[in-house]
Each structure stands twice: as structure tokens, then as C-alpha cells.
Image 1 (cartoon, rainbow, N blue to C red):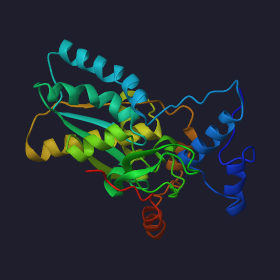
Image 2 (cartoon, helix red, strand yellow):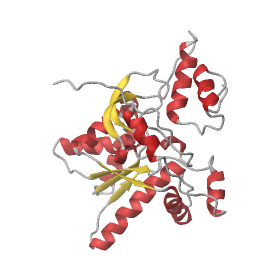
Image 3 (cartoon, helix red, strand yellow):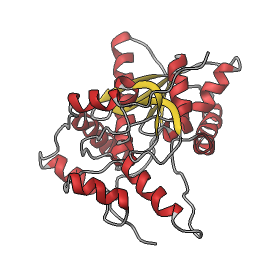
Image 4 (cartoon, rainbow, N blue to C red):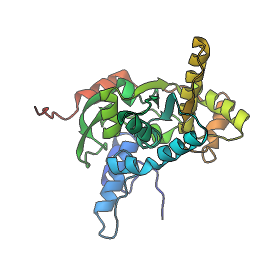
Amino acid sequence: MCRLTSPSHETVYGRSVLAKNPDHPGSLGIAISEAVELAVQREDTKYALGSVLNHVLLHQTIIGQEAMLQMQMANDWPDVVVGCAGGGSNLAGIAFPFIGHGLRGGQKPRIVAVEPAACPTLTRGKYAYDFGDTGHMTPLTKMYTLGSQFTPPGFHAGGLRYHGMAPLVSHCKALGLLEAVAYDQVACFEAGVLFARNEGIVPAPESNHAIKGAIEEAMRCKREGKAETILFCLSGHGHFDMTSYQKYFAGELTDEHYDETELALALASLPNVPETV
């Protein structure tokens, strides 16, 4: 198995991206386009989708189901469930079983999706039909999106650098079944370092967003004088992104900001799909 950096010179689409910008930082949307292009060229190759679409979210819900059993063992139940959100599979994995439990008449915890301020799909995106990849090789899906042509800045949380949100997560947001917040990169790393020093686990940059969200919920409870049970998903460890922590401690890690003009152009170029009655 070989591993390529996207955008690459191995695909037509990757070369077209690099021709326009040789220093392009890449995005998950571009990587999907390149992977699909390579897969369709070979009869012995299939493209295994790792995020966003419904079957992946369903697979991930084993996390939430196990969490429900663990809460029952502790004779407790969460008032708040927090998860980081990029494509949506991690958030859905922890939150969907609790949402389903609430819809069936059980307790309804607040569901908080935490996304990066540099790629705020749920908090700044539009609920519309869009392509799941930058090269427009995938089917159209209705989701919260920043526009398939939007390129997030190069912050240290690769799995969250995606222009769209899973259709099921987007639908839940539209129905008011979950809420979303966005935090800057440095604040999330501060939360991750605090967690590591207290728990002895170095979290992934993506997971730092959920930790930041959980801390904010705890501080809210403190201000309001409430005692609530907060459940968050620690989605991964940071052993393969220690460079980002080195930059953080060296004072070289900064908050990345997207271009408002680019965002406006990307949203303006969304496919024109009329809503059916």
C-alpha cells in the first residue's frame, strides 16, 4: 500500500489543482476526488468511504451504544453529549444512539457538535445540495456546506478540514436535534494540553475540539451553579501529530482564518437544485 499527499501529481485532478496553485494546502474534498479518480480506473480497486455517508455513520454508532451501556453501569445518564465534527461520522457515532433514545421517549441530552472556526460547516454553512468532493465526481447530497470549492486553511486537524457535513447530521441540525459551536485552533490545543496533563493521554488535534467543548460546558455549569453529567468522545490520540504540539509549545501555532470572499464565492457556486414540494 502506498500513501500519497493530496493534491498529488498521480491524478488528472490533482495535477490541475497544483497547476493553479503549486503550494495548495489540500483538503479532504480534494483527496476524495483523487481517490475516486484512481479507483474508477482499475477493475481490481474499490473506493471504501470512510466518513460522511449514512452507512458509515451507522457503523460508528457502536461507540454511542457502548457509551449508553457504560452510563447505565454507572447508574447515570448524560445531560450533554459532545463530539468533534468534520465530516460527521465521529459526532454521529457518539450522539445518534442518544438522539434515537430521546426520540423514542427516553431522556434527551443536549447534543453539541464542536467544529473548527477555520472550517465552520454547521455554524456558517448553507443547508443545500452540494458535491461531496471538490472535483464533482460524487453524487449530490443535501447537507450543510461551505461550498465544494471552499478550501479550508491549513490548521492542524486534518479530519475536520472538510467543506460539507454528513447528510444525516445536517438533517438533525436542521430539525433542531443538535447544536453547533466553533472554536479557534489555539484554544483547542490549550484544552488538549490541559487534558493530557490531567489524564496522561495526548489527544489528537481533532479530539481537542471535543475536549474544548466539554470544558466550556463544565464552565457553564459552574457559572450557573448546576451539576450536570457531560459525556464527550475522545476520538483519537495525538501520537502521529506531535509536530503540532511542538509548534504549540514553541509559540508557532496560530489561529488560521478563512477568506470571507472565498467563502462567499464558494456558496454562490452551489449547484442550482430546485426544492421539490
